[in-house]
Image 1: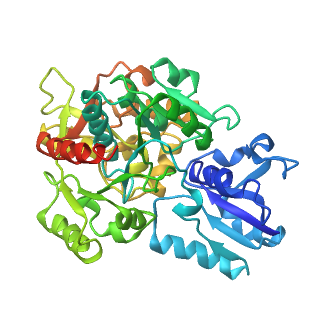
Image 2 (image 1 turned 90 degrees about the vertical axis):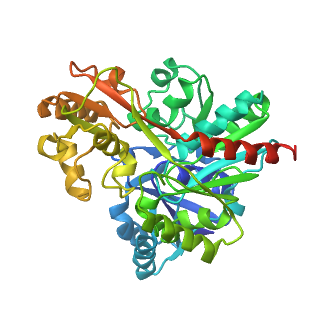
Length: 437
């Protein structure tokens, strides 16, 4: 039996354990390492979930301790089980593992995808922040109008109690409190719930699949980061981003999504440069020449009744997009420029952990990432906004920050959606797909 470590970031790693390693007599998982999300390494993978082969819960460690762990526990193999990494980063991690004498592994779709009895439509990306969720919402709206019984499943973000969060069903706003959802989780679920859709998440995706198959005729997989689906897709949309052109063939596992896609979406064509769009088109012709291509505009607007031109605004952007997603700005900056709003540099007013965030992710221009993985960090987010003395907050995070932060300063939501022309094309693709069922 091989002794192994799983490298993860609270999501794909837990699924891979349950789908492949649990009950696998060839492997004994000695530990998980955790990265990307602050504080998640302070937990353990519960014995209850690990199965009969494990007498104790499996410990978590910071990824920085990987080399020492391999030597201490005489590890045979290390599996990388998280997403949104450059190819260079993946090989740097592999080189570190190999230098200790251990083997380095990746698990693929065949070993980790669950097969559904119902049709699965998946929306994935080549990087985080490409615009997956607006496309997913549009698909849900189209199918709802066609009287299809559809429910969404989100790539996991289980940052709390793993034993309690096996199956989460978000269908009303009170469920955010029920599951103690972080700001990042609310970013992904809020737009579904406020539109009357049901979205599932959690830890045990086999249990989630069994439950959702009883309630829906069609399943929509809304992917996280640039990971590939946990469910085998019957129709796979993969979104690319001209603002990070070229990364569709330079990211892990984004390039795998790119090569698996049934429909490749070039998003944000209304704001990206023609040169960047052509670069993605070139890569599609080179690596996926027979794949259907859809160009979409990401239409940005403000949910405001007054003219905000000239106002001093602190922009709060989607957390993962700005941090490990590598974007220097997001939809909030696009909206501010469109409406002639003055952008405050959030770095000058950063409090607590946000100072460290800006130091670690120095590429971020002026936006404040919507990080709120703990009550303390939510308060630091609040204090940073207060310290800036801004006239208005532009919330380009999909989460309901107005209710979470309870500030005196007005908060205006930045919305972004798929354009109508693209929506009609998407509808045609979906209707052709449904004819098979």
